[in-house]
Image (cartoon, rainbow, N blue to C red):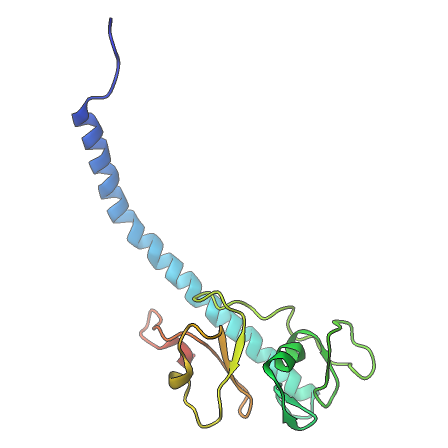
Length: 167
């Protein structure tokens, strides 16, 4: 009776060839994945920053993070960006502008940071540098309400050697 099967040498040869191909191809895919995340971060920052400017224009130069002239909570900040607000920064959870909440929403939702998967925002006080606040785990984004600066919460470097929190 004739049995047809692969010999041990043939199997070892195929596994070796597949290993060599994987060693050549995988680094290229990893580089593309890193560049895609980097591009996503830059795109998200551009979108968020443009919406912060629109918010400031519609709220008499006051950036999000303030309500009736006082510092607002993170929950209020997130609603100021994703729901409707009055000219004083008071928020409604509605996405449909109705008097007195005539402004917004500016973002459909807060985007995820592609590096840590978080869409939360953490305040950074005016005297604190972003390099000291960036830990990559506490939130997806960092925001200084006093200066309206919005940065990614990631302490790694991009493909050109710049720290992400400096974008």
